[in-house]
Structures are given as C-alpha cells and as structure tokens.
Amino acid sequence: MSHQPFISFTAVQKSFKVEGREFVAVHDVSLDVMRGEIITLVGPSGCGKSTLLNMTAGLFSPNQGRVEYSGSKVTGVNTRVGYMTQADHLLPWRTVTGNIAVPLQIRRMAQNDIQSRVEELLALVGLTGFGESYPAQLSGGMRKRAAMARLMASDPETLLLDEPFGALDAQMRLTLQTELLRLCRKLNKTVLFVTHDVDEAIALADRCVVFAGRPGTIDHVIDVPLSGERNLVQLRSDPRYIELCASLWRRLAPDSVAAPSASLAHSMVAS
Image 1 (tube, rainbow, N blue to C red):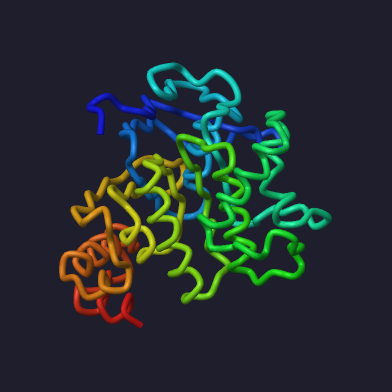
Image 2 (cartoon, rainbow, N blue to C red):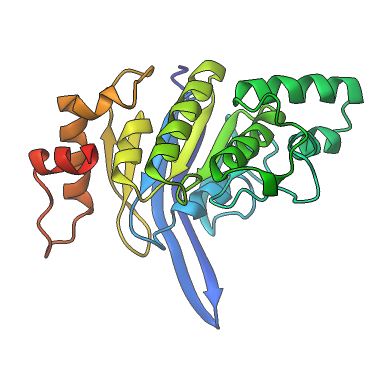
C-alpha cells in the first residue's frame, strides 16, 4: 500500500435541513483510507455512515472540512467509485447480461468488448450460464451476485457498499462475504463498507471505524490484524477474531447494557 491516503476526510461536517430545522449528520470527522484497504463503518442508525459514502461519491459536498480522493478534492460526481446499496436495483426488463452491460453501454464501449467483459464478469461471480435469465427468475443471492458483477463492470477503484448483504440469510451472507473478500483482494479494490453486523464488521475489515450517535463522530478505530486472505468459516474459532468482536461489542453497547464477554461473543458469532 502507498503511505499517502487514497481517500481522506478532514474535519468534515455535513448538515441537512429537515422540515425547516437543521440536522447535523456528521461532525468533525477525520479519517484517512489507504489504497487497497477494506474499512467497515459501524454505529447506530442515523450517525452519518452513509453520508461519508455519499460524499466520497461526490453526491454532495461537506458544509465544512474537506473530502479528497487520490490527492484531489472531490468537487463533483466521482466516476472512479462504484456504489451498491441493500437493494440490488436490477432492471426487471433486462436479463442478467443486459443489467451487467448497463455501465459499459453508458461508456459507449464496442458491442464485442461488452460481450467479452460481461462473460468475464459472469464467470467472476459464479453466474456462468445465467446470463439470459431475468431478475425475477433468480434467487436473492444470485441477484446480489448479478448486482456485484454490474458494480465491477466499469472496474471502479473503490467500492462503496451500504449494507449490501443485510437482507440475506446467514448462509448466503457468508457466501457473498467470502466472494466479496476474494474479489477485492484479487483486484486490489479499496472498500468503504457500512454494516450493522458486528461479525461482518470484523470479518471483512482491515480497520473497523466505530461511530458515536447523532451527530455522527468517530468514537474509535479498531485495527483488525488478521490475514488478508481469510477463511471466514475458520475465522470464527480464531481467538483474535473472538476478542475483536467482543471489543467492538463493548464499544457499541450503551452504558446501561453490559457488553458481552469474549466467551459470550464467541458463542454469539459461532451460532
């Protein structure tokens, strides 16, 4: 990794007006993200995690402070990032192939090149043979794979992921977490990943950024000194992982609620 930050938030504040009243989403947030890092963002709802993703994407600017991407201030839509939310937003009238091709067609890529790229992506996410299927014919997990392939189609440097696996069952979530980790390490993607899941936050991260409640501020950053090439099943029995999950629980638990011990956290993440 380079020693220069790839994404940088410096004393960032962002507020919105809601029904005539000002609402502060994030306050005095400073964070440096290195190229190739996977950063997970956790904290209570409404604490500004998604706001950071939106500012990285250039969908709006901070009221105070500065957001920089690859050494330059973000002043408009950032075409070097890809964004994926909890909803897959697949176009129901298009096949899987047609959905994946959308960003390539927007870029006016030659049809032969589009076909080649889509076939490559179908293989990459394990959907070879399903290119002519429509979204309604796919399982929830397959839809997520198709959405991930579309996300990767334009080869963005950075992936902005806002609870992309939140609606899936535990088994499918594990499968897609494994797939995401494999792809990001293979393709050296930088990732900002919003989640409310403690297990997911530690399992995927190089660092986990913990937000305090509204207005959103960074309470703590947890380093995750685990191997980049992780087996997410075997990880559950790793004592370092168990303690990291317990540490995150302690950070997230309200003062009036006892945070789980490492042994209890182990039983929770292993169940």
